[in-house]
Amino acid sequence: MHQSFDPSIIIFAALAVFVVWKLRSVLGTRTGTERPPFDPFEARRKLREGKAGRDAAPPEPGRGPGQVIPLQRGETRAVEPARAAGDLGDQWRGLVEPGASALDGLVKIGQADPGFSAASFMGGARSAYEMIVSAFAAGDRAALKPLLAKDVYDGFEAAISAREARLHRSETTFVSTDTSLVHDAQLRGRTAQVTIRFQSKMISVTRDSAGAVVDGSPDRVAEVFDLWTFAREVDARDPNWRLVATEAGA
Image 1 (cartoon, rainbow, N blue to C red):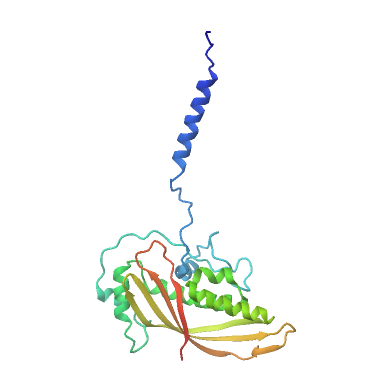
Image 2 (image 1 turned 180 degrees about the horizontal axis):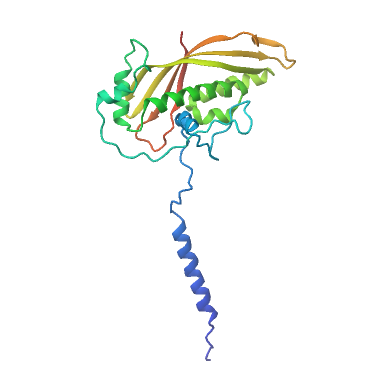
């Protein structure tokens, strides 16, 4: 039996071809709106340039809307010609502890990673230091997690949980971060590690569930010395530096 031709078959076939073509043109294509990896170590430069955007990191504890420190989430780094060791070392003048042997390590890191610069790294490290201390005091796990190596985060999280189990709450107010100097720097394989000695002044107090002070004082400014080590893989696409070790250091 002769069957009549149904023109709708052509219409549906054409629509199917168009849909497949449209999907292929979109999927796997960079539109420029993708979120690059989070990079806390460019914080101060973004703050100075006034380029805060919707992709800023979560606010520090105690900061309201409009008071968020804008954190750059990484950028494509142009390939730069190899820089001389002298040029790489000059940018660290005044940023390394007297007598420290860190300069050689900093130069090696700079040679392995052309995007490594003294100004952006040290400014971001100071911001990260203040953010981490404040987030720990507030028990803000979400703010801590992207900034810490897993074992360091696990230690911080355990201390926060123990504090919560006692129904204690901690309050920390930064008065100033007076100095931050490189204490040590090493390139181990493809892993860069930089240890910074921070000297800061802060007010810290811990209260129980009734509000009574159980540690510290709300009226005393304490001088604090810390040695913190940050690390990242120099050839990784992820630009993040994370805190990998902490210790008190006078």
